[in-house]
Length: 267
Image (tube, rainbow, N blue to C red; front, side, top):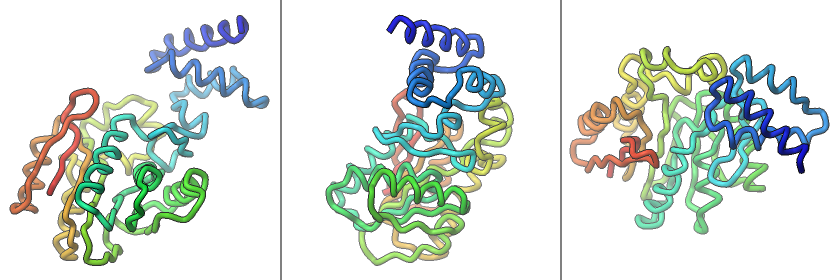
């Protein structure tokens, strides 16, 4: 026990020197990882962290909605803020008896898989991504977490190749929303390791979302509810864009656990 505490203290000091966020929790995770994996060496982990590699990629997984999701450099690391998106969508699904769910730009599959795990009823769940490598990880996560085939995975650009039945539908999108000028100033651990395609939302931060809205209109896809994650600094612009494409729908903003304007519901 004393040796383990000394190890945690040493790891935390290293993390603090790096100014690594949430060093207390991460130090405990690193210590447990080393003690569970005989081949894991503290020095090698320190070397990777010093090169700005995120701990989640070193460990190989990230906890999200109480499940461990495999993550690689082909998938974005799930953020704790996005857990609220999952729980909010569960309420929408139950209240409105949703039969079709589309997770647009699924990445690791954390949103679609978490929803499938938490629902007792089983609507049709579709998840799309333009990256074949990301979809491969998502399918692996489905197998490891759900233990059965529950989701239809579609390799496509947003919803281009999605075909739905004419039933109550919820589309969920956590697309790249960081304006390029802001993206270029992010921490090196993000810039050097996480996929740019999942973060950089173009000059306005809204390029992917506008393409999604255009596809919904062009396909005349019956989407009753859209739940979107966005960036606080472009929150009002995002709401205005939603109103432009869906003038007859109600646009509602919601805050995340840090009291930031983060989510938009189009209903």
